[in-house]
Amino acid sequence: MSLHIVHFIGPINHSSACAVRNCCLQALQNGATEIELHMSTEGGNMTAGFALYFFLKSLPLPLTTHNIGSVESIGVAIFLAGQKRYACPGTRFLIHPLHWGFGNLVAADHSRVSEWRDCLDFDAERYAAIFLEATREAGHETDIRHNLTGNARIFTAEEAVQAGIVHEAVQARLPAAGPTCHWWN
Image (cartoon, rainbow, N blue to C red; front, side, top):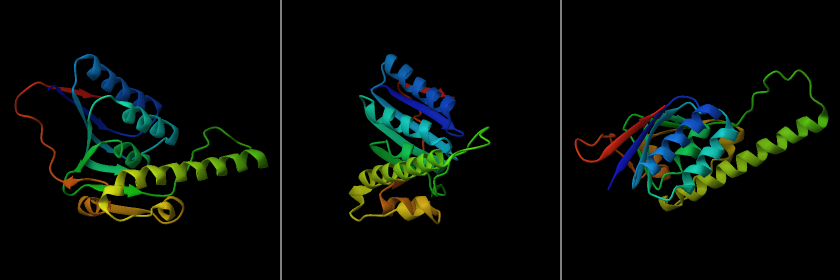
């Protein structure tokens, strides 16, 4: 067995999503039989986040995710790509209303505003579907749709266990010995 650990701390954007993807691809090329993603993120770009989630789900080997600080916004969806999911005690998960930045845009017509609303609604529904699918093992449904459009919700590590976001609240530990490779961005 060859464990590869990808360490990621920072915002989700196109560059960071590509960096995590590239670390995973390099791990595969170097004989990884299992990947752990140790992460802490304030979230960020939804397009990059959903792309990273679907990439991680495509990996042909077991993926474990571990919250080592705070996993927020689109970072929660990425985190849920792990088949095994853990959180250090004292960490948190934040689910809040989705939003977009508009960059240098100074004007928009009705059609464009309607398109953005439809896209936000679509992203909220796919986020909720990802959450529901990943947390189904908890034995009860935690509906987060209202947290994606209204009031935010914080889950402690212990509450995340109850909701099925994580399987256990346990301190992350790096292996003391054995064939382990570390990747970071």
